[in-house]
Image 1 (cartoon, rainbow, N blue to C red):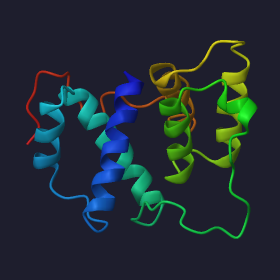
Image 2 (image 1 turned 180 degrees about the vertical axis):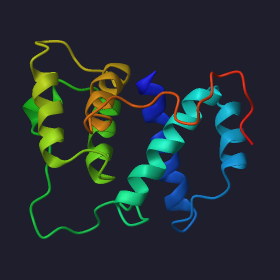
Image 3 (image 1 turned 90 degrees about the vertical axis):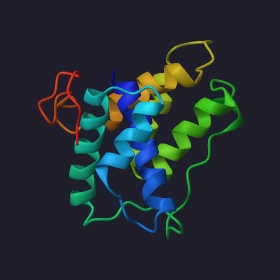
Image 4 (image 1 turned 120 degrees about the horizontal axis):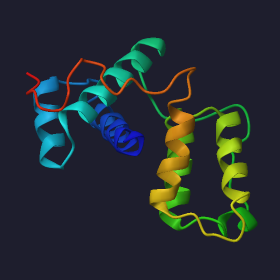
Amino acid sequence: MEEKILEIVFYLVEHVRSHNGQIGPFRSISKDLKSRGFTDSEISSAYGWFLEELQKEGGRIQPIEKSPVSVRVLSSQEMQHFTPDAAGLLLQLLRFRLVTPAQFERIVDKSMMLGGEVIDLPVMKVIAARYVFSSGATVDLNWFNVDGNEAIN
């Protein structure tokens, strides 16, 4: 379930970026996400987590545009362990500051330890979700106290 919440978090980040930093009304976001197959519980959990993170960041989530330090690039050897989609997701996590540089390195290391297996997008979502939501506890999958049968207005 955390992988789906991660997908919703990416949706929310993209939504904020495309709406000049505004999150917008929950009702319309929820309706769009439901049309994409997400449940009320997944939506509310992701939205709650996202709002908490947004508050920690002073109300803004922005990609790193320019940095005075070097930018992490996956080596050709590392890239052999990821499909293009998986590598793209991993780099987006870092770009949108959903993982720290240290978490990024741990994700790469964990992926490399899986041996000769090429990491595809679904596997990367599982690995990444563990690090994105590792702020001391697991994601509260019932942030708004819904069981998935309620309509959130």
